[in-house]
Each structure stands twice: as structure tokens, then as C-alpha cells.
Image (cartoon, rainbow, N blue to C red):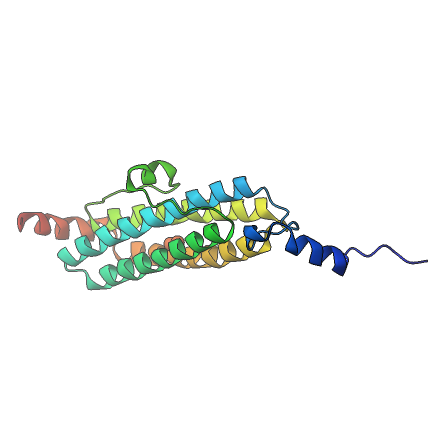
Length: 193
Ligand SMILES: [Fe+2]
Ligand SMILES: [Fe+2]
């Protein structure tokens, strides 16, 4: 006796592919709730953009405090978050959505916060908190997606791995630049103003 194949028949695949061709990459087999996925991607995009800006600010501030090592790390993270934002925006378009870069609603849509920070240790700590928020929210979304949208899941898994790297690097920096050392350096930076 033949077991029913779990795969869709070729004729059905072909017919479905022709119907709703204007939907591009979104096919009848797309199992996830597209509206929900687009909303989660929108929040992730906002989170990445907030992280780009926060790391950018921290890069210039750390340079002012004459801490080249930390500044370099902030700049690298800022650029990598920009890369994440671009990949998420690209996926939003593939799913038939529109990436929202509107600055006035960014903070509200983002999971992570924009904290300016005014000491080296303070900036590192805030960045670590933001990374930990991103890590948990990506992990949640990945679990939610399950097998229903493997492409988005894989994209977010790749981003998650980088956020974990970021958090790890920041944790190391926090050990190397504890608050006691960073505070006087900042006082110096303030005096220069
Ligand atoms: Fe990121
Ligand atoms: Fe990150």
C-alpha cells in the first residue's frame, strides 16, 4: 500500500506558482502569519537602527575620551548593526512589506533603548544591556517562526549569532574598563569642553 506523500504534487506546485504571481517570493506554501512576521521584522529593524545610532554616538564619545580600542569596537558594532538592518529591510520587501525608517517612531518600535551614556563603562554597560535585549527578542522570534518561515528564521539565527558575539566582546571590555578607571577619564573629557 502506498503511503500518502508529504510533498505537494508537482502539478499543484506549478498551478499555485502561477496564481498570485504578483506576490513575488510569497507563495501559497508560505505557512507563517505574514502580518505578524512583518510586524516582528519591523520591530527588529527599528531595534537595529537604534543600535546603529547608539553605537555611533558611543564611538565618537569614546574617541573623545581617548580610548581607541573601545571606540574601534563601537564602530565595528555600529557597522554590523547597519548590515543587520539592511538584511532585515530586504526580507521585509521580499515578504511584500515596506521597511519603515521613519525617525520619529523608531524609539517606540525598537526593543532596545537609546542611552547616550557619558562614561566609557556606562556606554559599554548600556550596549551590553541592548545586546542582551536583542538576543532574547531574536531567540523568541526564532522560536515563534519554527518551521513556518525558514528563510526569515535562518536570517535571524545568523544575526543572533553576531549579537551573542557582540555581547561577549562587551562583557570582556567591561572587565578591561571597569567604572573606576573610566570615570576620571570622562571628567577629563568634560573639562575640555
Ligand atoms: Fe544587530
Ligand atoms: Fe549587536
